[in-house]
Structure formats: structure tokens, C-alpha cells
Image (tube, rainbow, N blue to C red):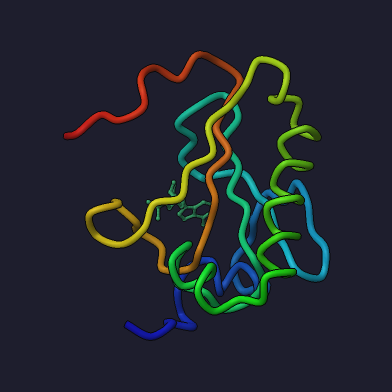
Length: 120
Ligand code: AMP
């Protein structure tokens, strides 16, 4: 599967769709999820064209991958969820339940999130 430049997050990155941005620099954008599953639910995405965590960790340079996860941690601290804890989730492909084919890390917190996996 190749990268689809018309996916929703690519449109957000190009400014064609709005986002409730909480952090942005030259490599990373973080914005609030439109359908939050927790009191705080933010999506952290690289600006590069990567389909999923699998694609990102295979094809992106190691320094880009490292900075992405450092920034995700910084964003969680900025959101104030580090104290009581939070969940960082990357859904990958069909079994992972990924809906948007641009790699994104969900940061969910602000309340007890329950056990890890509910299979519906
Ligand atoms: P996933 O199932 O891991 O691919 O997650 C995709 C997430 O993107 C879902 O939690 C959606 O609610 C969220 N989402 C879809 N469209 C938008 C949008 N325009 N702005 C913010 N979040 C969105």
C-alpha cells in the first residue's frame, strides 16, 4: 500500500482542513482528536509521509524517529497527563484498527482508561 496524499491528516498538514493544534514544529504536528475517547485525546503526527508506525520505523531516519518520540513525551507533559499517567496508542493496519493512513500516535489521558484492549 502506498501513501495516499488525500488522507485526512495530509489535508490537515497542507492546511486544507482545520485542526485544534496543541503543538507544531518543522517535523511534528499535534492536535486534538475530533472524537475524543478520553478527557484529553491528542494525535501526534510526523509531517513526513508515513503510512503507519511500521512504515515510520522502517523508512524514517533514526534521528527523525527519535525526535518524534521525544516530542510526543514533551507534548504529553505539556498536556499535564504525565503525573497520573496516560496511554499512547499507535493503531497499525486492519487488525490494529487503523482508520487514517498517516502514522499517528494517540495520547489519551485525564482519567482512568480501563483495561488495555476491548475487542468489539
Ligand atoms: P485510527 O483509528 O488510529 O486511525 O485513528 C484515527 C483518529 O483520527 C480517530 O480517533 C478519529 O476520531 C480521528 N480523526 C479523524 N478525522 C479527524 C480530524 N479531522 N481531526 C481530528 N481527528 C480526526
